[in-house]
Every structure is written in structure tokens, then in C-alpha cells.
Length: 99
Image 1 (cartoon, rainbow, N blue to C red):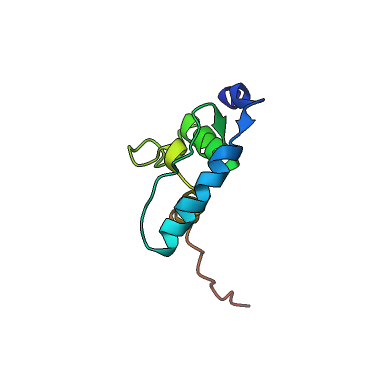
Image 2 (cartoon, rainbow, N blue to C red):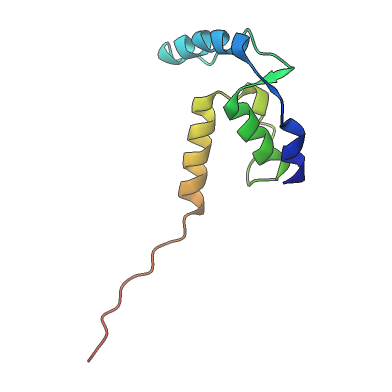
């Protein structure tokens, strides 16, 4: 968790926010477009979360497909939903207790 502290004070990627409109348009057209305005010196909230997950070695973040700077907020949401489904323990079956 100490690694997360190095991101304190990081700037918000306002210019990249404008570029997300192209990414969103790509989603509507079923295309995977990169953000043309992505900054290397500023971050989105979702990029910060993804970076901290990767730094903490959260399951499946060590693959080459999990690149925080290339994940959209929607990508991160889908990753977390899938991760939650895969890591949810099975519910115990109820058993009737005899009196």
C-alpha cells in the first residue's frame, strides 16, 4: 500500500477527458479506439485505481492485457465485475436440521 502514496498530488487528466469522447464514440460503433489525448503526466481516477491494483499484484493484473494507461473507466468496471464473479465463494447449500 505504500506505493499508492507516490500518486498523491497527481494531476487530473482534463485534456484526456476530452479524448474520452472519441473512445465513447468508438464503443457505440463497436470499435476499440485509444484516447488520442491521453497524458503521461496526468491520470484519470480509473487509471489511478488500475495502477494501484497492478502495483498491489491484484489477480490478473500482471498480464500484458492490463495496462492502466490504456484502460477506460468502462474497461476497469468490466474487469472488476468479472473479477468479483470469479472470486465469489460458492454459497453453502442449506441442510435441514432434524429435531
